[in-house]
View 1 (cartoon, rainbow, N blue to C red):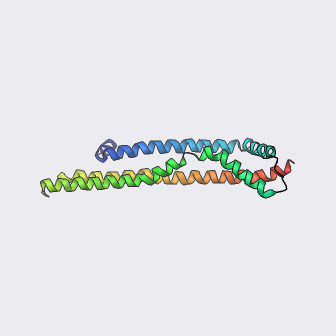
View 2: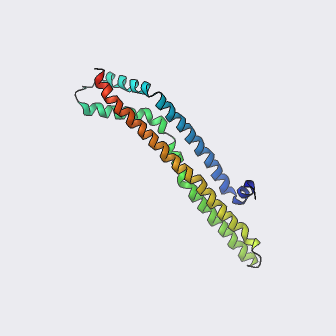
Length: 176
């Protein structure tokens, strides 16, 4: 049996899962490129944040205020990098639920076939069982890489933010 037969047996739910898979992987690829570009141009980002802090004319003696300004500015600047990962998280969360919906629908079709024709011929209800299993597998195939990708990209962003923030504070005081 080839892949297209499996997709056809899974029905509409598998098509929805395929669409979600494409959307999710596209977002993850774009976010990965954004993170790598931000890492590459980290020095520019450092300079921009330092300039912003200097323009605010806050008293540099109050380190607490400076640290809060740095954190706020970094959160604003990295928002565009992090924005969109919520969609990946949603896909990772709903894909198994869609698989489960397909499972229930397939079992329902199998029982409907049994109620109409009886248990004499197993091929009558095999289509429903096949749909149930295919949609379960498809839901998990979509969910697992999205869950891993979401957590990996989020940890990359957090690490980048921590690295840049830790480099800014000494640079602010050094350039006085």
